[in-house]
Image 1 (cartoon, rainbow, N blue to C red):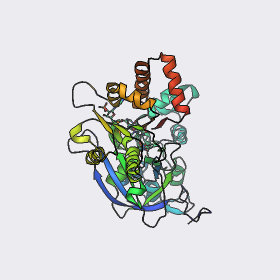
Image 2: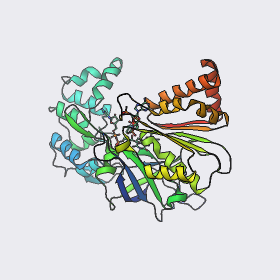
Image 3: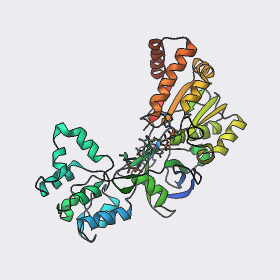
Image 4: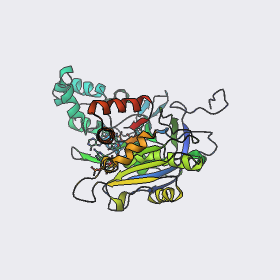
Length: 385
Ligand SMILES: Cc1cc2nc3c(=O)[nH]c(=O)nc-3n(C[C@H](O)[C@H](O)[C@H](O)COP(=O)(O)OP(=O)(O)OC[C@H]3O[C@@H](n4cnc5c(N)ncnc54)[C@H](O)[C@@H]3O)c2cc1C
Ligand SMILES: NC(=O)c1ccc[n+]([C@@H]2O[C@H](COP(=O)([O-])OP(=O)(O)OC[C@H]3O[C@@H](n4cnc5c(N)ncnc54)[C@H](OP(=O)(O)O)[C@@H]3O)[C@@H](O)[C@H]2O)c1
């Protein structure tokens, strides 16, 4: 084990800590439109330390059923010997299970298919630089298995095929616990990625590894990825915090609340949470109720998007409370946002501008300048993905 000069163990992508699952339970109830779960990973004896706002890198393995489908499409038994990224000879089944991505498609594979099919594959027309958008469209919802099944005349040697794959890589998860509250453990809040495309049921590699393919004996390679500036103010400082975390975006805020309770943080805290339905997707409901009761949380606003005909999102709750939101900002509050980058974070940003315009009596330019000031002062912090 490598150690820093402090004598503490250093875990990273080359030297992950091999942890074990301690406990998991569903956060979504039967009937929910999605599956999200809470994971507790044992770190006993690891010396691994983290701070609320950090994320945990997890190195998954692939779904053995998909490995078998890929081997069948290639006409391999799985026993053929190949060299893995560490230079060891292993059966190709093992290499596909633990070392290579069999979902993400590398351009090398597409080029090899084109060469082997004499240019007759539809992929041939997608590889020119000016066809970038067409290639992107082709790749959306497709995995390595699709390329193989759609191009059955392209034949590969085992070692050659391995050389055309990307390496299997870590996924990051916002840590949803504070070590002051949970000790030698780390908690995660993970949405299971499942969808259908091109006639096949698809499974996100790491989220379904965690949700469906591990138990308390499965080795879990992990390490901490420090959160860049996604940090609480010092507990003795009287700074209010506003946290906006719909869906799995709630994860770092559960960690923040545990930390603030454990440190008796002085400033007040306001949480916005959003999910599809109060009945089936109210993650950590009892914990938040307890925080409201003991004052760790001053205010909680939830947006249930599918419990009525029209969508209600976290930004609607912000706007409903615009006067108070503005007052907190003027009192020096830090505004944190975590979760979906593509839609939610943009709409929440718009709502922030609207609140500043309406309640601060500012023009849109002045509101934009106010937001820039917030960012410069590190009072508007986002961890979106
Ligand atoms: C800093 C950070 C923190 C994060 N924190 C969390 C967290 O706390 N909780 C959490 O659940 N996730 C979190 N994520 C996301 C997480 O890292 C993974 O991206 C997520 O779990 C999916 O990984 P996967 O291996 O299951 O899916 P992958 O195998 O990586 O598959 C995902 C890919 O599938 C494709 N895809 C997905 N849906 C569709 C569709 N409908 N149609 C076609 N293609 C589709 C997309 O290309 C997508 O990129 C975080 C990400 C970052 C960067
Ligand atoms: N890279 C990946 O593969 C991957 C994997 C997992 C998660 N993610 C990202 O993380 C996000 C979080 O997923 P999640 O399951 O935790 O929750 P989510 O999909 O973000 O949903 C949480 C809540 O946010 C609502 N919402 C949808 N659009 C919104 C908007 N524009 N503004 C505000 N709220 C909005 C949803 O409502 P409705 O659904 O009813 O509209 C739902 O009530 C995903 O959207 C995705 O972008 C990415």
